[in-house]
Image: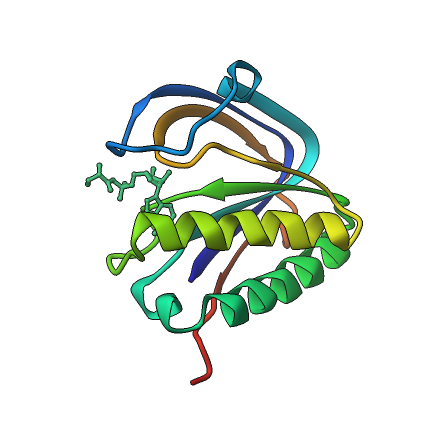
Length: 143
Ligand SMILES: Nc1ncnc2c1ncn2[C@@H]1O[C@H](COS(=O)(=O)NC(=O)[C@@H](N)CO)[C@@H](O)[C@H]1O
């Protein structure tokens, strides 16, 4: 898995068209979303992650918690992003991994939003620009 973490004043998105034949079903209210004072985490789930998705979820949560505590962010925006890797996992595996990361971060006490999976989206992001505001992490299964 590849992650790009941007500590932001806000991230907002608006769903445009379908990018997959069967994108995740979403409600009217999920067509737009915004969080202020947020750690935006753009994630590409990779082919190699398919061997042990549960391990990838746990490792991703550890990394995100670590960065969130360093930048003192208590809101996380989980953002599916297919452009950080050329070895993407299948959509059904990727969606499950992202849904579990969202769930686990909520269990850890964060306020969490996840942008809809499988759609082209317009988004605006305001990076804070401090030294830790832009970070990337790569996570691989240990097996
Ligand atoms: N492995 C993945 N990791 C993260 N997001 C993904 C992944 N696969 C699909 N998506 C989601 O599905 C959308 C479309 O995926 S895509 O790979 O860019 N495009 C497609 O698969 C089709 N347009 C055929 O190319 C992405 O914008 C993202 O929302």
